[in-house]
Length: 193
Image (tube, rainbow, N blue to C red; front, side, top):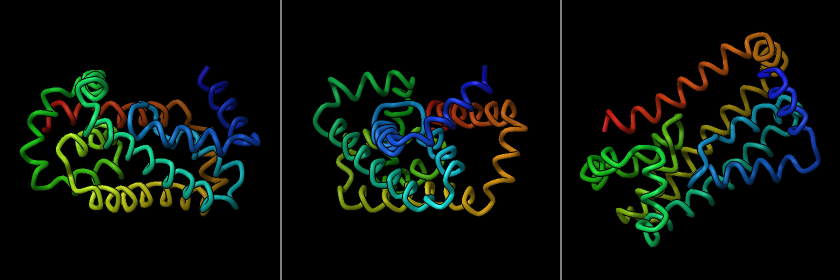
């Protein structure tokens, strides 16, 4: 089943409308969606390594735009939309604890979440809720998300075929590792903060 999903994703990555899907996933992941855009970015770069800069740019721009939606949710729609999203990720307690820390170190928190598997959407909403300076929020989001997506895309561009072979050969292991990192991000929200 995992092999069919991988093959389907690779075929989607080669379609004409793949860039729109990449932008859509990147946008919505920054505010509400649990699946990171890397799931589509990776096969797209592997399918056409010459477009790695274009794909990383699409991810970065759409992700920062989606982060602004998360900020708006936190600033103006927290009770109606933000709280249910935070509850979905079981991060209510962490959300309360991190507020004090966030008043001082908020920009660094956004940068951390923008680069790592930590659930970025939690901090985009939190940034709006706490009123983190919007310029700081946008600059840190551009730097963090840009770093992450350009690094992933460049590595795939640079080492494409061996990485593609490695991915196909170790698909089950890589999927498990990805899920451990994703779940680890959610656990970090609950227990570290």
